[in-house]
Image (cartoon, rainbow, N blue to C red):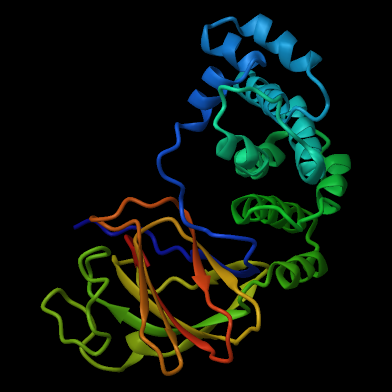
Length: 320
């Protein structure tokens, strides 16, 4: 087996006030298809291949037509016009609480009501990539820093915080990193308990003290030394271990809250999260496992109450 170079793991863990249910909706058409079939904006023209006509329709739409504004972003992004794509993206997010969609009888009402939130999610997911390549981003950076977060869905907030993380690091602004981490409710650190197994997916359930035939450490020792990993902004950079595949085991305690919250987890690779309220049953969430296909980021509801939560995070990696 060929060893990979040891690199630190990047994990995002944030706790946000819950603005509603985080579960995916079922029984609805894909967003792009619904826009093309149900909207009389440029999306119908775009689905028919009339790109120039669609661009003109998007540009002439009413300022509060969020579907048309997202159409301008999409065309600019696909054409490589990064400056236009990012400018319209920031404008859409700035006005997320006062945008609408052109009313149409063919667009399902439930989807029509959720359209601004869905398009804010999609818009924010591109922000970091656009800020990496756009020329002279400073004016747009300042506008993004002032975008109101209240009312935005968690995926949109995560996309904005990822972009601001890039901005702060590029500026070397530690104060901005710390401020945004506090605003987003990011965890301040994780306690590393050690490594189990050498198979990033199959060994996610292996007990920490297990003697594994796969080459995992059999008892506490140098490989199992507990290490506290402090956060840098919303990122938890977990130090490299030995360059071999395996499962890193980490833990934290989440304080109680009188309000429902969402635990936001972002990681590239397989993972298993176990949330255990004091005196209650554990809640297990699998992240990019062989059995469950999941996105890179997920939201886990945290109930309100007087109980703290014990969090165990298991990260499967191909080079630690």
